[in-house]
Length: 395
Image (cartoon, rainbow, N blue to C red; front, side, top):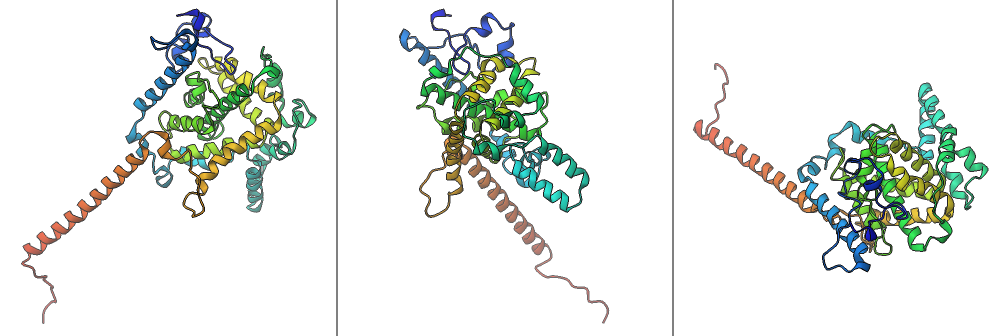
């Protein structure tokens, strides 16, 4: 390893040699998908000043190649019509009302009251007590991180978590616009992985949750560094969607798009809702014997950074995500001139061809069945001499 050109990682790339010098032996292999995170990978002809950039480009190509190698087309096709065929986990994931959807909780409360569902009313009302969320945060346009509204928004446990997060050495006032944008892109992929797990576990994390969050997030699984403007929102979301179709139990494109919509909603509802999600993610990682280090590298710095930036910055970022989703809703309309940048064809996984092949195969099978039935009918007709026998009884 050339110590002068050690790979850097973490939210603002403040860390290096963590796995080589400080972590226990074997942790990197258990914690990441990226092999040898503290070793520089570069072409032999790369000059010293470009070695870091070359390393990151090669590492990204390695990630994409590994994803392509691990993609299981048959497994993807199995989940293609899961919405119609039914799956308990999928149904729960798509039907649940998450904590960032206060309006949804209130609608459930009204419906439960109309149906005299007393126990359900109590349960939902209890949830609402902890969820006086987003409508207030949308109206707020302040960068104060400890306002009375914010203090009343968080539960005592969440407030304690916030108070115990150690401050970082980052000087947020000196961050460049590119660094701020890069942090937003990292936030985007972490929220995607968190929301996917939150939905598929019905909001009750399991022992697999830290792995799920890690494996869906390029930032966590490969210590990915984003470089605006070359990296943008569609790129990051496509990478997350790709990974959601390769690794977890549910490999559904429709579920992935629903997750993107959730992420957009969380961001547009402002910093407090974002922080609540990050605190829940942090708690999941903290309980893991393998993935706890992600809190120091990414989650804690993100929570601190989100508290420092303008509320409007977060909400505008959410609107950017939502504008990308808007292209999907306009597909098929005559006035549509937009391209849906998260469409299957842009994932570079051959999904459209896979689905077309399956439909052609299914059509051939149906045609074969029809021909076989017709052939069997002809055989029966010939064996009876072409006549049908009717027993009319005695005259």
